[in-house]
Image 1 (cartoon, one colour):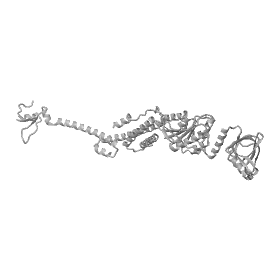
Image 2: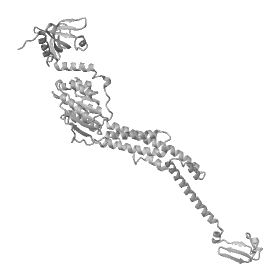
Image 3: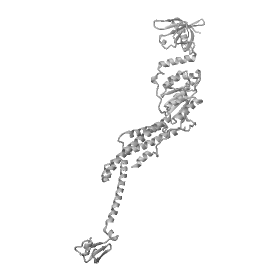
Image 4: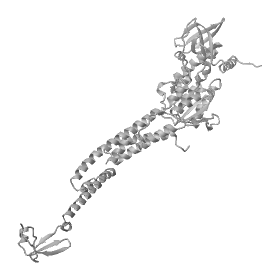
Length: 102
Length: 401
């Protein structure tokens, strides 16, 4: 299988997000880098969201004698989850105000 | 027909007895009598029933593992294998376990297997493995029919659909079940690379569950390279698969829940990080803005260029912000300059003449001077009056009143 497992993808995104936050936590980060670390964080968080919200469970079956693996036809549509909407992205007014202010 | 020595025929009988599948693994019911224990710690007794007696020997090494200790006059079940004591031409039961008489065969088997596997360390708590936090692949060994497989799929689809489920279908009751369950476990490990395996069924009678107490299955679970969650779906009886599994779940749904994180919790974690990043970025911006304000104050009182150049090494953002201020300062300076230019224009003498004023002076070429008083003017015979387009000569006709 060449494609990346969604779990691996998610773990990588989460690790990168943690990395960006750690970067922001460090003192003396130049402003330009702080801004881009923040933008990257928002991007990563949104990617995490869409992975978790839109992933479709993959189901397979292995035959114990032939060891053949087949995909199952059962499809689970993504379940609705009522996670709080994230106030991030282009409409982040506080931050944009501050950036436009100068 | 043949002739045999005593030794030969005894050896033959011994072989018959010891290789007989019934006689080498059997529980015998009877009442204990003539119990004696030797100095070496071996016990000898008879099992009696219906006027028949059976010689039994219980070696010291087996004593520690007994479910019940032999007592004269008690009805028991004794487990062991038959052998021949050649010296005296006797057959005897070599006992390795004694149980109270009332126990059923399933329970006896269960207790016996459990005892032996416990001794071997298959249930040891310190070898229980932690389940992976976020499994990529979850193997499931159960029946494809029925609610177990359905429940597991449903729970995983709801909680953590990023993962992949792979079932190795197996019957989960009856004679063939242990073998199929073991093959399922092996197939998953060999070809599906799971991070965790759930093995189970949806409850049932003691007989239905018996296959989950199979010794071979217990060993296959123990050998498994990845953690195993048992989900045999029962409340009171514990089966051996539960004891040897890394985690025991009360139901298949519970097993599925134990195997995957809830994505709502993961979303919260993600949001916490994102909000943290936002807070930190806001803080950094606020700090820089304060610095910039100080810079602006400095620029306001001096030529901006050297000040700006001091910040040349600063980050692009800061530079950009500062530059924007400088541009505005320059624009303000231009406005100021334009206003000065207008005022200067007002002061230009030619402009004044154009508005109707004239300059009065003497005529004398070398010593030409401005006449700024009526008295000086009336003392002269002739005056030069300069307009914006040229000068004329005039003569005063009247002295100042």
